[in-house]
Image 1 (tube, rainbow, N blue to C red):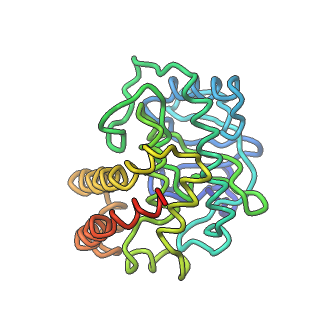
Image 2: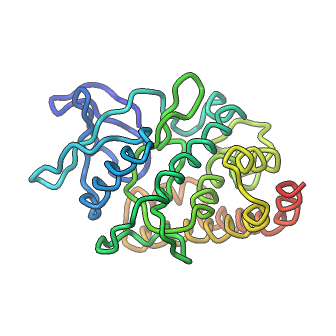
Length: 271
């Protein structure tokens, strides 16, 4: 998130579609609404650092009014329409490496099975590692053109590492039909080349590369269902965004494009 203006309660941080207008920076701290899994997440963030991953916020405390305080991570966070600097191949490669680093630490941390982890974007096959599930540009902090930290773990849930990679690919390749991509991304991004860069920088195995296009399709379907649930609940932000971005016809177009190009993506990944 990026800072916008000043206020008595601190600087409002903008970015993303959840917690809009409710996230503030106060010096070295960020205060935001605490998700239902905040206690388990704070424990997980502490464990990440103990296992060598220091590229996430440090938990400070939960407040009595249902908010949480985390350390502020300085750097650049891109907002849509995304600038070219955040979509360079160097930036993409650094995202893959950072995600691998996160997973290497996360796999060693036991998942709190008592927490009611959100299922909306969770891996339908489950898993024994806590996935971030929302590694989009708005949740990655950059310095000097390279990804250096991940923020906003609100949608974290148990899953497979490959599911997290697929979710990230949706935003960073991006895995969108050309018309959808043109609305928010710089021109000239080649999906096949960028998907291969992400797979290489993360270090996917041959088996994972063969599975990735299909997992991306399932992840896209989960994201569509996520939006549908919020629109059905009358969420004004998601309802407005759905209308502004082409409605369900856009989601149909994306899914059709993924199916039509699955063989090409698989060939590129395994070549």
